[in-house]
Amino acid sequence: MCRRWWPYWQERGLSIGTIKNRMAAIRWWAGKVNRQSAVARTNDFYGIGRRQLVGTESKAKDVPDEQLSRITDPFVRLSLELQRAFGLRREEAIKFRPSYGDHGDQLQLKASWTTGERNGACRSETRSSGKSWIAFGSWQGRTR
Image (cartoon, rainbow, N blue to C red):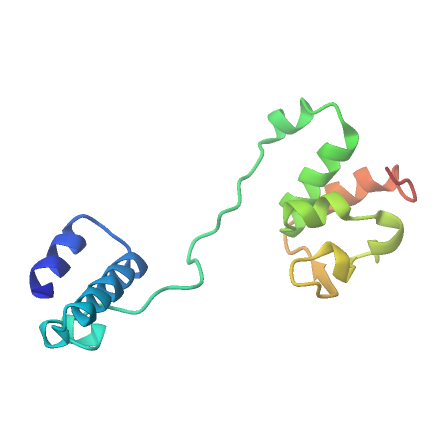
């Protein structure tokens, strides 16, 4: 029964996770109608692979310099520069305070700013990080 569905779902481009969820629903149904033998107990029997729980591609969006220069709010602009230069998440960049986090060549992040509430430090490996520090120099110590 499922030998027909697996190629059909594969042709339609469904993700591995979706296919596994559908197989679980079919197994549940088979159990309710007392036909467990109609469906194999494991997905390996059908050749269904493993889920990818960690993304393989970056979701980052880069703001070109011309668009960045049109942003009038200095706090929003600096937040976007931090995201670009140091790879911070949006929330981390918004909550960042230079008076606490500026340690020269690295940023120190408070646990309350980060996902998972983990303290941490990050360094930039791009040349654009210097530009962000020049911009932050004039805002040192100010908070919103």
